[in-house]
Image 1 (tube, rainbow, N blue to C red):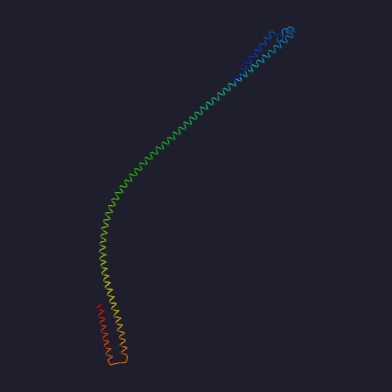
Image 2 (cartoon, helix red, strand yellow):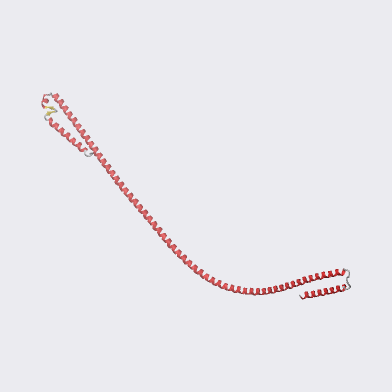
Length: 274
């Protein structure tokens, strides 16, 4: 619609020019805008006035037409400028969109490259971490193998030391057992001797105790016997102090005393024997 408007204005300008030419053609039947019959009836002043008016009107129309043409030219120029400005604006917008699209594409490409670079760095770090982890595991395996080898070596040495220590302990134990056996034999002999001595001492003590018991029994019997003799002697003395019943009483008392003396001597002899 905007592009067809200058074409319509140009068509109207051509049509107005054609109408002006047509008026000139009709003027050929008229004289300065009046009919020929009327023209010849006018005075020269009237004709001059009509001619001047006609010419002035023609000049006015010509100036109006020129102004219209200038306005049309300016309008068309303005339209052309607007079209060029719109085209330039459209071109600038298209260029801006293209630049923005290219910039976005470059930015997208840069982000993709940056992402790829970060992914590559991440993969590199992951590979480096995996390599270090593998090296660490290998070092750990070597360390563990070395530890196991050291442990086996230590176990072998420990086993050798244990065997040597066991042999030494067995030898020491045999020596200790021999020494203990000798000590036991010595102690047994001493115990046997001591036991024999103790048995002898016990036997002696038992014999001494039995002898002491016999002596004590003999003393007790002698004491009892002496008490009995004393009682009998006291009884006889009491009898002697009594009035003489017969003449043979002193003689009888003397016999009893002699008997008591003999019993005492016999008891003392028996005590000595025991």
